[in-house]
Image 1 (cartoon, rainbow, N blue to C red):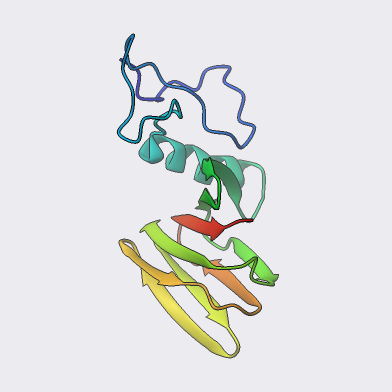
Image 2 (cartoon, rainbow, N blue to C red):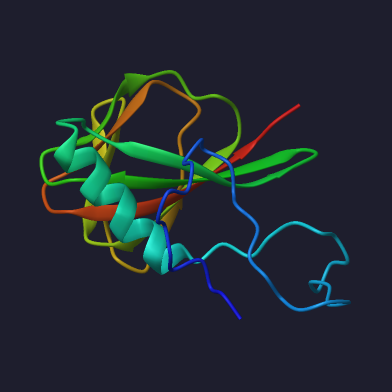
Amino acid sequence: MSHGGSHNGEAHDGEAHDTHHGEGSADVVGTDEPVVDLVDESARLVAEAREGGRAQAVRVVVRQPGQKALLLGLPAGGGLPDHDAPGPASLVCLAGEVVLSSGGRSWTLPAGSGRVIPQARHDVRADVDSVCLLTVSVD
């Protein structure tokens, strides 16, 4: 059984890639969406951003009607620049520590913590290698 740990020659197009579960198996909600190994993918995204000299690397890990979840790999010194809120969203820090800032206020999110993202311009900064899960409500 594969848990998505092998990335040899695998395309990374921002979509979750299928993992083998054996014939006839189905996930809990009864869809055929793949299971994504967030631990392996997190390490890969941080390394990809660092090696590419980018502030972040992003992969969509869940896409369904009304919701999208993105895994963000943020190397030390990286983050998301100031931008408008896309609609209702939340940010969960899975590893490292990030600072979410908006309207003159800021919130430090250590690993294992999360917060609703203000419906205003905001940015996210990572002073250490960090991984976050961003969930966004979509039309």
